[in-house]
Structures are given as C-alpha cells and as structure tokens.
Image (cartoon, rainbow, N blue to C red; front, side, top):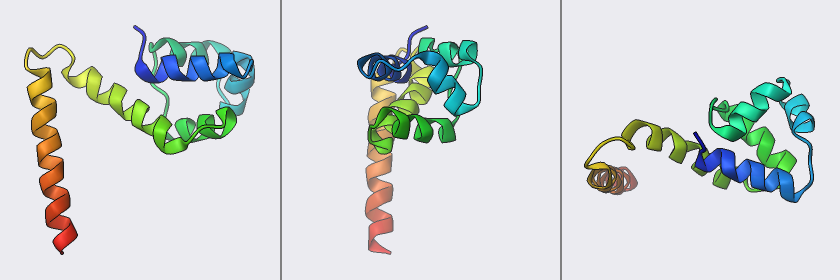
Length: 103
C-alpha cells in the first residue's frame, strides 16, 4: 500500500542519494521499519516527520501536511461519499477559523 507521504520521502531520499539505512539510523529505527514507512505499511510518528524534514532539507509543514493527508485518506478512502465528506470537513474548518478569529 503506497502512500502520499511514503512516496514523497522515497523520492526526496532518492534525489539526495541517501541510503535508507542512514535515515533509519537517524530516526533510531531499523532499516526494515524505515522501508515499511516508505511503502506505507507502517505510519511514521509525528516527531519522525519533523526529523525527516530536516534530514531531507524540506519544509516540515509541507511534510506534515502529506503525513496528515495520509491519515485522512486512510479513514475515508473506502467511503462512497469521500469527496462530499472532505468538503463538509473543509467547510466546518473554515467556519471554525472565522469564529475563533473574531474572539
């Protein structure tokens, strides 16, 4: 099961020619576990995402967005109304931000 986040970190790692074992060591996990993160068989922890952003020299916010997108995808991908669900959530978030901005 490939993921948005896993694909991105694999691409970035390959572009920088960094071996998986090097990133695994920096994350203090074994190489097999890191491989599972790239393949989408295992989810990286949030703190690992920020470490990867530094190591791969990318914006941590962008990488966290992809990581979060995978979490949302996992929850609603099988739903028939996935797009409508996402639209409802986006609208609710926009309303929430408007309300909290006024406070």
